[in-house]
Length: 349
Image: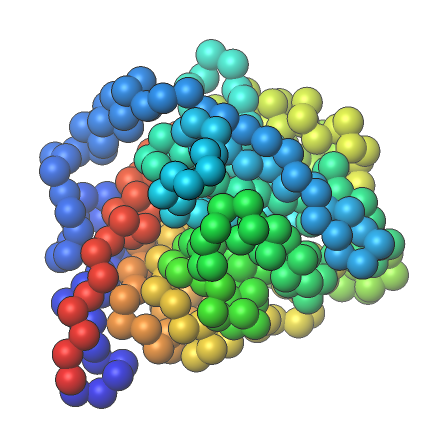
């Protein structure tokens, strides 16, 4: 048996099946509704969520980090597993992963994963949100340097030498690029709404028409109209509650109506930015059925080249690009929970 075949029993591919179907999944839930109710039950049973703000330095740039977990850390206590959430191109970290949408249910992935027992961190990248700006366009390479600056702080505060990483959209590209740069720091990796080469992806095609604009400007317009367009551009607006983009707008506009251009330029002109053969960790890939930033063929090309047999490819039904903001976000939570808590495989030769 060669190394690419090891762990085949735990490889799971769920094509159009959603959650709870497929060999190797721990499935005590008979339906998506049961999963949703179980998530809610666990949330009620969990303790109080503690949060704190931190700062890391990338040279002269101060990077803002945000942390959530159940209960304040205590000296001498067993450390919790760490999950680091990497944001995408258009919104900063807290509106991406700690969003409040009053009266509409839970939209904070940080809260959800904290209640599952993780020490959850996120960070505003260079030029976004609460972080400072170097004046660069905050491309993928810059994002990797941001993560390199942040990880030692997280290690110091948590006592954990490795952590799980999650990235959505260009945050997935950032997380994947970091995983190949510092593989010794990455435990398990979740890539959501990821783009590999972008061939045949409608949104990538639209960005390619603006390459010269992106090259000429380190920042691009990101106003209320642009945020709303994120939820309509894939032709599946009904998969989101209309209150969600309004909550994001309220959270983001205090930082201004522009964001860095780098990840858009990278996705338009410089793909691929992650070599799957250099991503050594276990990987979960999640795609919405109607995600305009990728195609099944593009992502399966990446998936098939991953060297670690501990990997899963999940497609979520009735879902477009912004999976974590969707009405079916509970399916994402379920997939993540099973993947991150999976037992280690028995290594045989």
